[in-house]
Image (cartoon, rainbow, N blue to C red; front, side):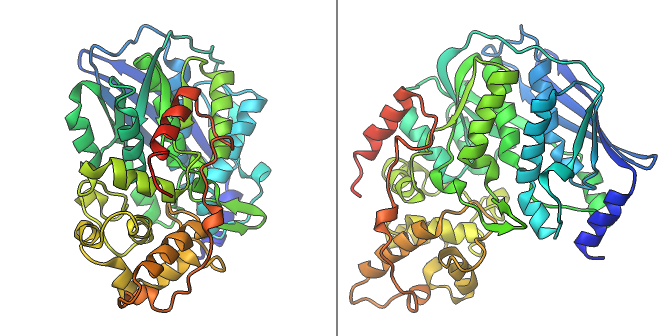
Length: 451
């Protein structure tokens, strides 16, 4: 059964997705958030139970009403279960959304599931995807007196490590946060145990996999939107004003346009989402925590050089490969590995770079197809967190000319260098939300580089 037929079949049924409830459990050692969802297929009920938990410490303050923030975390997390059958009806029993909020979440679900919609050959317009029906009560905005400190989410890749290294002196008490940390993230947390926030996220994975095996739908979700809502909650718990993301300008570029929709694997890392999210939080959740991306004015090229300059201690620890990160390795076969190698190849010497990745990735014939997809705009950009075609061509062209009389590695032998240097710039005055102190910090470090 082809995916589109399955989608149409599911939509014809009287299916409902139900956000039943959430629960905040607090004891001496932990704060646990529990979420209960249901899929109602014409009266056949399937239950899903989802959980987040963090260890308590003296820095945490729980003397405020958390319900509004936790309710919203549940709405963001629900997408992992909603996508199984993508029903038209989404019933919220534990809270309510006004019309503006419904429109906001409809946009998040539609664009955040863009890759899912494309890869499952689904044809649906934004206003047709889902209808929210609410049966609960509205929540008041949260007010907490926060301090001039920062929470920096650490994913284990080069970008968040750059943010951390550039900000650690200005914010010596900055908190580092990781959700189900991989080894690379764990190393950062362990270096600063007094400033570390480790959050455990537990999907109802067995049930999700059971539905997948029975032919239901599966695919990419806007995970960074979940990180966003969770980080706002953490900002309130730790009375910390700034949530400092590490999304760059190239996250704004779509992978492909499908049925008039821009399909962007990195939608929830884009400036469009960031602006929408900031406005939503201010309108409906709290005015006391500010969310923004520190690296937004930069291209991937700039971030690569910042990493090579200021994050040398992380060369052999960082991991961006989704395939290999759980095994603490670079798989050496995926678009993310090859893209990261290309970004760094002009700023880390060849011997060190090959030691990091286990080989010269530009000299691997098996990567030709991935290589072509990264620099040729005629195709579909890989559905990974990779940069723009101009950024890739800038790096490849610079590397190509560096060989002079030396033999070119395999993937560069047929490559034709391009002049794209005009595309690379630091745009401090463009679309970004950096507070002045963060903008000045970024400028001071970028000025030390030689572009």
